[in-house]
Length: 268
Ligand code: 23J
Ligand code: MN
Image 1 (cartoon, rainbow, N blue to C red):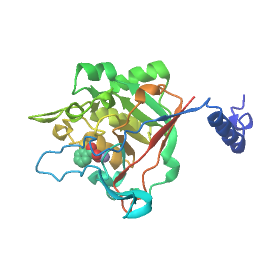
Image 2: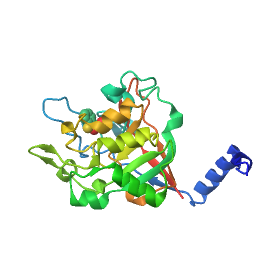
Image 3: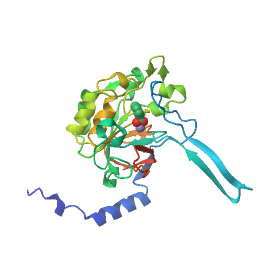
């Protein structure tokens, strides 16, 4: 055979029409992977010598009253990395000099792509400090096939079901939450050419990653290679291991290092 699949594939207009029809008929479902942007949502706690991310705040401007008789609205303020959010390469020192490394310059073509979901719930239930290694990725690929180039990879831990103090899980020695180890992130970037990596926890790194080498290895490796991060994701248990499409478009903040966003998944 020639292997020329292009001839057998519908053209782009037909593909898009199929997408629209699939959405209209709900054969393609949209799953919301976003937590509610809420003043009570937990914020990452860094060691006390460092600056801290501000939580989400809302202030009423008017509510059909003397301040605005026919309209209701708020002023809001928040850190770029509050709530369900996106990390751009400039967020980390390893990505500071890359081209198109900010929320206002990154190529939007990368913001929609296929997604693989690696289920680490059992391991994370058993160990708050679980580190996903290359062995776990190998097991995923043995079952579901190789992670395609230019995929998003999400680590499912069940962490999004935690509430209040259990989410950050702070102890005297800092936060405790699962994440990938350095070798796993390096593998995904170098061997699988991922677009980005996402977690249910407050960081793409483990809670104890300040002690790793390099510190915060997921941030260091991902952003140093121009890849993106997603944090505080929800509803990963509603996604298939492969075959869904992720939509993750951060706000176009000038020189932004990240942004809260609505993360959606298109699921067959
Ligand atoms: C700054 C320093 C360490 C971390 C983070 C930010 C994040 O997780 C973040 O939101 O990017 S681990
Ligand atoms: Mn972040």
